[in-house]
Image 1 (tube, rainbow, N blue to C red):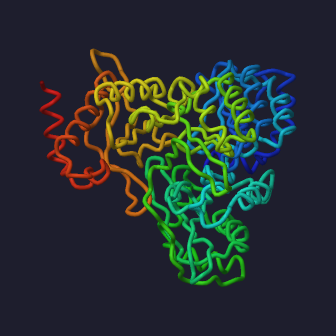
Image 2 (cartoon, rainbow, N blue to C red):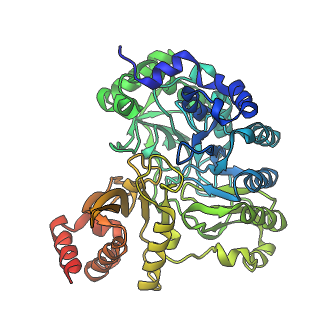
Length: 523
């Protein structure tokens, strides 16, 4: 079997074995770094920041299930201020992302994170990455049972575990027992979703989801997994992928390609053979309407007298000082805990009834509100070419500007439309599941290459999950807000009574919408 370059590097030295080199490079400096170790740095959450010739790094810090304590939030913020020029991003996988780090900073960052039970280990690389979950796991009355212990058990099972430190590619897990699919299960390599078998509640297992340039929806193995069986099944799926996943071509190595070739039945047979155990067939997945996993506002928890409050962080970008302020108000009005979401937002949980009104009056909640406008409140963005070497275009400022323009153009817009933007095909911004998705491209204009975007409509998860489809190609960046405005305007003029944008997008003919957009652009 012909192995790709990354596979050869992993055979030469396991990604987890680069730690002692990181400490050595911290003393010797950026120029001493072996080029192969730049790839292995990913096993410790570290990427080279754009441009690669400069001595700066991006780092992701895992937050399993998005669960962040007061002490952890303070340390994350302090590190961001000390080493990351005060910048802290919330990602679509509930993690935190730093920029501007230098190699000499890494030992102190590792030590201070470890002191509060946090780690960047395996936030990137060909490993099991940050486990995502419902951001209100353990709080929300809708969930069938509490998955938090399983989330932590999975984190501990795979953390720094060399048995699973050389997978064919990255491996993403979602675990949630909320019927609203808040963990975005269909786009994960492995997802556990709530199910019933008679009076018993447990999981159905979905495998083979993923985005990037060739998105796939995960397939249901149609087995009922009891709660006490969940960890062994998760480990079994990872073993099957480790042993049978493709390693020849890097862009064909995700588990989604294996599942697509095998089918769910063969994959299930291999899983059972690997574990030496047969699982109960059937059961019924428990599912309600998907709302994009947005949880703004004040919500009653299942614990009497407590509430969680969902707040908007436009495109997930905040400063370390803002995170410190969130930690302060969470401690003053709740118990200090925070939850990060896969929509790049934040939740303050465990707020007693008596404290809700005072919390809502805090100045920080005027800027990062519990009642955001329709477009800014549903806008998601990847890092973009400001820092990412893979991105073709700038995304954060662009998406925030587009959303603000749409909110000004359509004030008091009643039906949220989810806007996602990616700067490259890897889809960290998850544009394929957006109501309106933007995929970065470049187009030549006046002899120069300028930012442009392919525009797609109609994506969504939950029941009837589907990826969106392109309706406009390579729209110049300074024109894309008008293209989206025209799509929204066409929706407002032609929707049926009570019809959501997703329903409308599924009904409208592409030729009809494209003709409208071309006519509007010609005016």
